[in-house]
Length: 104
Image (cartoon, rainbow, N blue to C red; front, side):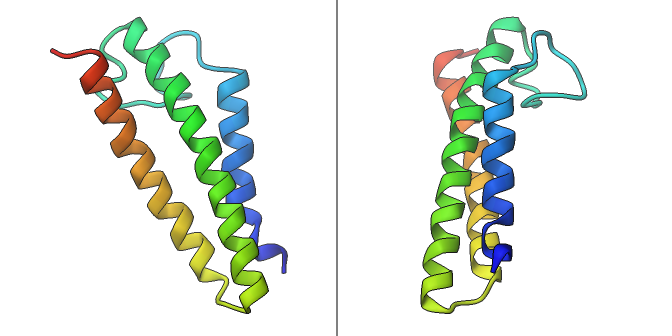
C-alpha cells in the first residue's frame, strides 16, 4: 500500500528541501542545472526557486494520483508514471519560464 505514495512523497520532500535550502551559488552538484539556468546568478536563483515550487506541486499531484489509484485498486505503476510525466513537464515549464523572463 505504501508503494502508491513513495515517489510522490519523495518528490514533495525534495522540492521542500530545495525551496527551503536553495543552492546559493551555481554548482554542478545541487540545484536545477541546465545551460540556461547556469547562465548567471540571477537565472540560477530564479530557476531554482521556480522549479522547487513546481517540484512540490508535482509531488503533491503524485500523492493524489497514488491515493486515487489505491481507492480504485489500480496498478502501482500509474502514480509512478504520473510523477515522471510531471517531472518532465517541470523541466519544460522551467525552461519556458527562463526563456520568457530572461530573453537572450
